[in-house]
Amino acid sequence: MTDQHAAHDPAQPDPDHGHDDHDAGGHAGGHGGDAHGHGGEALGPIDVTMWGVGIVGVALGLLVALCIAFATGVF
Image 1 (tube, rainbow, N blue to C red):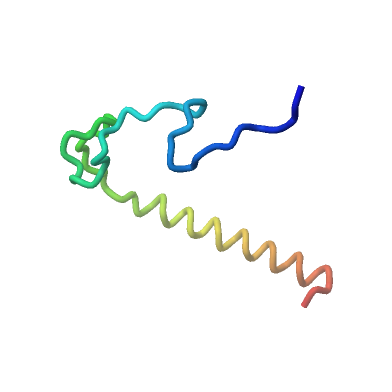
Image 2 (cartoon, one colour):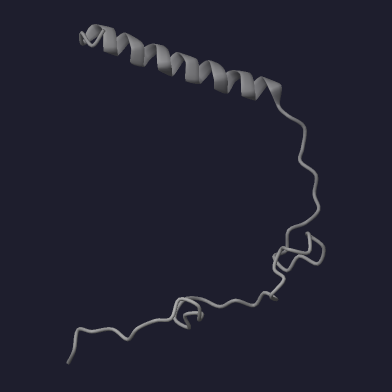
């Protein structure tokens, strides 16, 4: 038995790694006729309250990290 692998030409698709059922155009022609099943749904409204709560949470986390840094003598 040998430990050598057969040389693989990078220009050729590897049959061991999935399949490619796309046409050669791929996404070059825009998003019309998308074969991936992406719908044309619009995004919902921005929840300003939840974004605000998230920002406050991040700020409080940074404050805790700063307090730990001061308590351990980093600053």
